[in-house]
Image 1 (cartoon, helix red, strand yellow):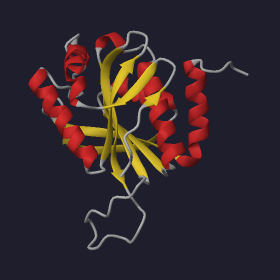
Image 2 (cartoon, helix red, strand yellow):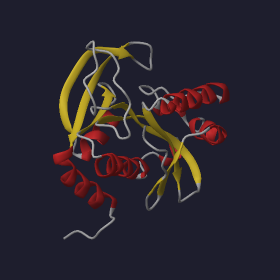
Image 3 (tube, helix red, strand yellow):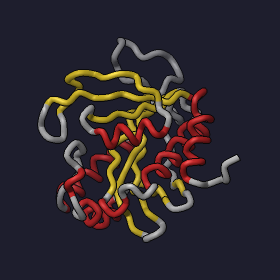
Length: 214
């Protein structure tokens, strides 16, 4: 089971999600909810507390690693994200097919998802640096084979952000899930492989201005 970890960057710190962050998350989610049309973001303290408790339960089972996003420029928690759908390919193949295998110490593949930011942090580079921190941890500490990212096919803003990372577009799964607006959602799938990570990392670092361009 992956250990809890704090991931620190230049202007972002990803902290293990806990109930201590609930009030700050409520404040962030209440700023301007007009950008959440395709993203489920808890509304109010009761929903937020349930959201955090569910994420922590999933983490305790070794299925995700959820974070609160702290924007160091303001020293405020401005959103949340997680490494999720963790799969462990070590050990014997589970039987019968489709049953859940044993949880190991480090995942073999993972998704990045459940990402949302308060209005004040959108378009500031906070999301981009958060992705750099999580991708670095997944590929360089866990040594995963693949990271998957998804978005509602209608969410052009999220899809553009994923594509800007350099992720590969894998296709669209039709009628994939229930959408945030209570419709049947088609989902765009993207991935980054371990072999692609160095180029993606260089691209992210350059876009964040963390090193001078050659």
